[in-house]
Every structure is written in structure tokens, then in C-alpha cells.
Length: 286
Image (cartoon, rainbow, N blue to C red; front, side, top):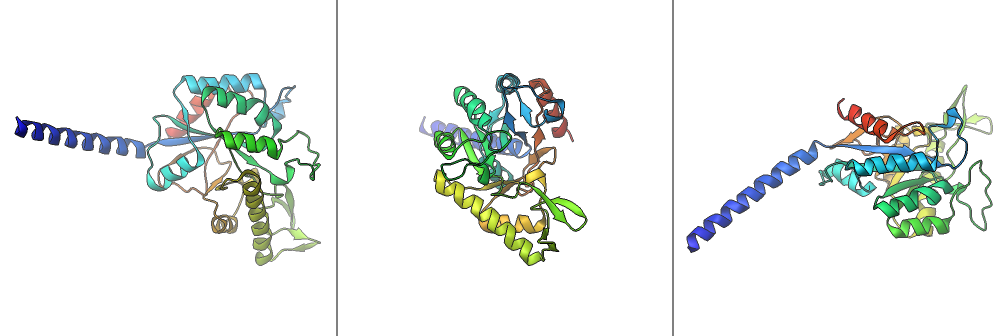
């Protein structure tokens, strides 16, 4: 009887190990979609703003469709650990990001995610976060550090970086370029590479430090303004402790992919939940 029990135990261990290896292998085949939102806005949305403004009603329908079709949200750390080390993920993982730090994220996305058990990531333009000493005026209001702290402490929304004050285009010789993309004209003179590197180092380190000081959490992700950076900006971000960079290249992300070039899927106000899933499945099939 004792011998039979030992043999049975060995069979169960071997079967469990085989199942684990199968699950691990299937996990490494996963494609992880990262959605890109901006502002949830309760007002009239012009057609040319459909990729930036989404009504609360449409947003809720999109998110509930994903929830009802088995998508489970993951964190930035989950995505990083999957892409670098093959960390196990849910059957249908998804990362949902919001760029800029609009008040609409706090007013509409945060309570919905809290209600249904979802998580999200908000990449803030740090200079645009209002405070008693920063009376910034923007076309659409941004949430405060107090509201950011509430979202971050709840575990529902991660607050990450969208630079301190580099979310603009600037002159670079005869062209206008995003400020992280390369040397720009300063006082009529094009920066040297050293000056360019110093400028973006100051910006990205200040953004990281401000978020960490106000929220008491480590910042590990950067969203490139307009989705554009450079090898230099990637090296600078890496040296400062950023582990993930979000771009605006459309697609999904895979094991051993570049964590400094995270692809995202733009969600529009005109998209239905079914449209989003079709986009995900299209990119997964490529």
C-alpha cells in the first residue's frame, strides 16, 4: 500500500510538472495589447478629436465589453516581467493607459475601474499637475496631486511619467520635432548632442523625482510625447531607472520584445468594444 502511494505521488508530481511546462510554453506565446486613451470628456467631441476625447458613456461601454469578454488588466511591472522573463499572465491580459493626466481620468475612469476590479496607468505631464503653487491653465483641466495620490494609493491607477515639460514641438533647424526626439534650437542655435542629452536628462529626472516625492511610489514607465524619442532618450531613460517606454506605434507586445518600445492601440470615441477586440485580434495575427 505504501509503495502504491509513493508511485501515485510520483505520477502526480510528473503530471503537475508537465502541465506547468505546458502552461509556461503557452504563456510565452501571448501577445499583450496596451490600449492608449487620453481624456474622458463629458461634452461635444469634434470628429478631429475622436482619438483624444471619449465620452464617459462610450468609454464605459468599451471597458465593460472588454471585461465581459474575459480581458484582465495587468500592471506595468507585470508587462515588464513578462517581456523580460516570461512571467505568467492571465489568459487574456491587457494594459490600459491614459496619457497627459486629465481630470476626466479621475472623474470617470478611476471610479469605473475601482467598481469592476480593473487597473490602469496614467502618464502625467508633471508641469501640468495643478497645485497651490502651480496655477497652470490648460485647455482641459488636469487632476491634482491629491487626486493622483488617492488613485495611486488605491492600487487602481498607476501614475507614471509623460515628461516634466517636454510635451511640445520645437524648432530643429528647418523642421519642428518633438522635444525628446533630438537637438533643438535654443536661442537661435542648435544644441550639441551633449546639450541635448543634458536637457532631456534634467527633464526626465525631474519628472520622475516629482512623481515619487508626491506619491511615494517608484516611477518605472515613460510615455514619449507624440510617441517619438531617440536612442539617446532611451539610454537616458534607462540610466534614470525607467524600465518601460510607451510609444504610439500600433501593435501588441510579445515575450523578449523591446520594453523601451512598447506598442499601443489607439482607442477612439467612435470605437465600440467589439472594434477594440477586432484591432487586438488583427495585431495578434500579424
